[in-house]
Length: 234
Image (tube, rainbow, N blue to C red; front, top):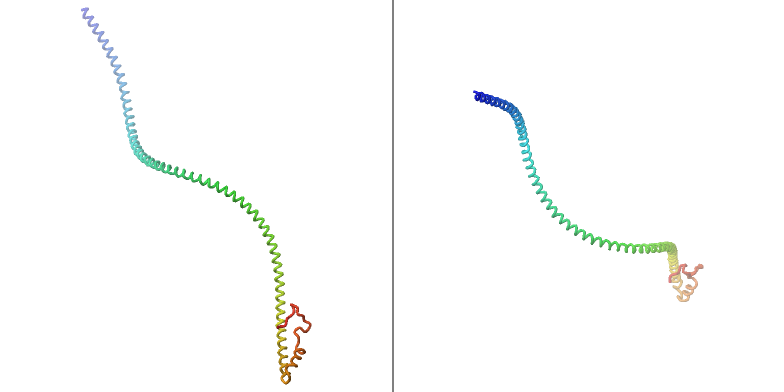
């Protein structure tokens, strides 16, 4: 009996221990259930977050596709730009060669300009000498012009004198013509008179007497035979 009682007591102790353990297990299970509820809530929140992330990832994928399209366009533009850059590089090389040639020609032109400057300096000196000579010539010309004015004045005076003498000569010639006409008229009259008187007599003696006594001398009247006096025709 004692052994049975011990066994029963042990069994009861074991049962109590089991009950205690079961209670601990129930507490642990309740705690686990609570934590599982929390986990489920967290999982739901995570699912919502995941859905939101999926949505955002979809948007990102769409944006990435758009970016890929833009990048492809940019890549194509970049290729075109690279091609243009290569063309520009070739053009720049050609321009560099042209600039080198231009610089060489500019150097030649600078050298020529220096030579021209030297020539111009020499020409300027020559022009200065010429200017001095021209000033001297101008002074001489001014003197010559003054002399020429004096000469022209003298020529004008001489011309006036010549014109006056020409007028005087013209008057004298008119007087001579008039005197010649008068002499011719007198000679004609005397000739007719002589012919009338000698028609019945000796023509020799009366004619001489008439010629020596009756014909008027062309220089009668106190006129002299100076160059300014009228001269009878021969």
